[in-house]
Each structure stands twice: as structure tokens, then as C-alpha cells.
Length: 270
Image (cartoon, rainbow, N blue to C red):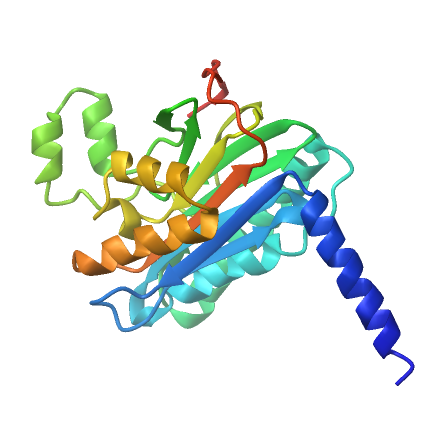
């Protein structure tokens, strides 16, 4: 009996904290219409300034082990003291997950791994970090930009001018990724970073989303509705169009509105 008032106070404080946060976010994940299991995972931690989607892959439906490992490790980040501290914690947890996934592969005789796409936000700054083909978009001032750059065989060919965009659509190995957590000796995380602006909307999605929904449709849904309604709308579109893969969507909106906001060059590299 004596604990009930404490729980009530903690819940009230949590709700007040959520209201005070400059973020509004929501996430959904679904196995789709074809796959028997969902090997995607996601994490939404507004108090930590962290949102993640991960798309696991591997034999015997073990891909979910890889994506879950990433989310489990990243969920321990806690409250960072600064934006650099948040990024350092993120990279530390990601390397721990990388090691754990490699050990699972070794002991079970399988090869598994996972993509990851993450948004970090703190002190008016954001960083988008990724490996694989899960994507991050930024919607600002009436435009949508794909912040991430796919780590796939077909994207490498496009970058070199070896194939055309039309050829890429029908490329037989278009889904082969070239970087993943849990694969290889070490990981190289690409990133872009910049200043947060009021009204910014970030969309994180696994390839089950982008296989069925265009960038324009993502922008229209994310701009017109709350993150929850936008996630549900995009998920419905994917399922209506066959849902050939697992699909995970996380949408983060920065509170406030500034339709005059313009894109500024983002720092980082790939």
C-alpha cells in the first residue's frame, strides 16, 4: 500500500517530462503479409534523444536475434551529459552488439547480422547514423531529403555509374547489403549531423517500407498527421500493397512549426 503514492508521483512526473520534451514520436513494426516472423526491431527513447530501427537477417529466422541485440544494447544508454557523450555511448553500445552477434554466429554455426538506422538528438543538434539499407529521412520546409545513403551492392554500382537507375530497379542483387552489424571484424558507421529546426520531421524505416511507398508518400503522410497517425497510414499502405517484407517505421517530430525553414549543409560522410 505504501508504494502506491510513489508510483503515482513517478507516473505524474513521467507524463510532465514527456510534455516538456521537444519531441513527439511514434513507432510501429509488422511482419508484413509474406514473412512468418518479424526480424525487425526498433527503439524509441525520447528522454535519451534516441530512436532506432534495425532489420535483422540470417538463417533459421535468427535475424531477429541480431536486431534485438542492437536494440537491447542501445536501450542501456540512459541520459547523456552532452551531445558528444550521447554519440560516444551510442557507438560503444553498437560495438558491444556487434561482438555479441558475431559470438552468436560462431557458437550456432550461422551467419546473422542487422542493419541499423538511428537518430540522436540533444542540445539543439541531431546526428543520423546508419549501416545497411534502412533509411533516415528529414522533412523540412516542404521538402524531403534522404539523409542516409544505402550500403548496398546496387547503390555502389549506381555511385560508380556502372548501371542506370532503370537498371537498378530490376537488378537481381538489389537487396544485397555491403555493411551490417555483426558481419566482419569491425564496423564503420556513416553519419550526417546538423542543427535541429522547429518543425523538423525525421522518418526512420526499414526496406520493407521503402519497397512499397515512395518518398513523396512518406513526406505527405509525415507532414499531414501526428507521428502515430502517419506511422499507421504508411503501414496500411505497405500492407495494402502486398507487404513483401517486415516493415518498421519510426517518426520523430520536433515541436513547433517553421515552414520557412531551409536546408543547410549537413556535416558528416559516407
